[in-house]
Amino acid sequence: MAQQKEQYSPQQRAMIWATSTRQYQQTLPTQVVTQEGMSIDFALPKARLLTKIYLHVKAVATLKSTSGTIQRDAMSPFGILRRVELNLNNGFSPYIVSGKELYMYNVLRQHPDVLLPGPNKQSLNYVENIATTAGKDNEIQFTIPIPVSLNDRDPVGMVMLQNNTANVNLSIAIDKLENAYKLNPSNNDQVAFKSMSITPVIETFSIPSIPGGQPDMSVLKLVQSKSDLFSGGGQNTLKLNVGTIYRKLLFYFEDSNEKPLEPKDFTGNMELVFNQADTPYNIKPEVLLHKNHSDLGYPLPPGLYCFDFSFQGLPNLGGSRDYIDSERLTEFWLRFSPNAGGKVTVVSETISRLQM
Image (cartoon, rainbow, N blue to C red; front, top):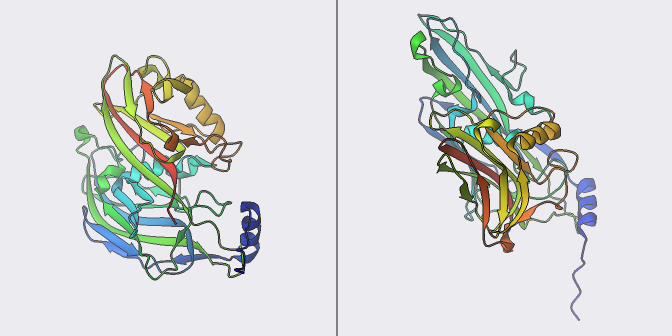
């Protein structure tokens, strides 16, 4: 008679995991960026389970201006990264976002203000902006997380690196350093590339060898984005993708001049609509922003409106109670009524179950 396979509950697996694994933080070799517009790739080592990547970027830009300083961009300096992708050779891409979209995604955390430019080089984000007519070198440096697992507590969504057939690759496409600033033509503002380097630090955990110690590898977290144009003066319906389970939805609205939309730029409420008729979320833009401020302890950047279904008292540490399972939906919409036309960027965090 065949021996029956021993079954473990999620709680038992989590307990065994917590007492049997070991955290590792390893720095990958730095790659030098020689010019704007290029792309670089990092092949992640085939060891352990990947939970997070810290992306450390350093750059030097030469600033020229008649005003003495050049204003920083509202999301400085993350626009200098055109694309950040984490790709698995089984067809899944856990991350496909721009640098600014990665910043937007990261604001749903405790102490989101640390992502803003700080006063010195000990800050997570440091952007110098002194300019002269002859040109002055300014340092840009930041470290931004790329969270792979659901959160720092639960062993869900990790990516197996220790597999001979699996290849995991981090790809970074570089944009212009001037994207870290808001140029004023009347001051003859100019930003020139001088140097840049990128260093990833990966957080991994060892794989327990005892029975029941290996976590559930069938769940994969996906962070992706898309952009759509909208018209002004009436109701717009934005169709959202179905087929996965939503944990977070972020919407960044800007007009045709790239100015972020404030609550006064909308008429009526923002609505999330299921199957054309069910509207579980129907909320004024002002109230949504105030809820975001209450949840995070810091106001969101202008133009950004968030629905965080993983929040239950702490950002990203809630259970599955409020997740939106769009696998059971035929239609999933955002309805809103802006006063003027523009563009909306959607950044979503979803989870998907692999066929094991």
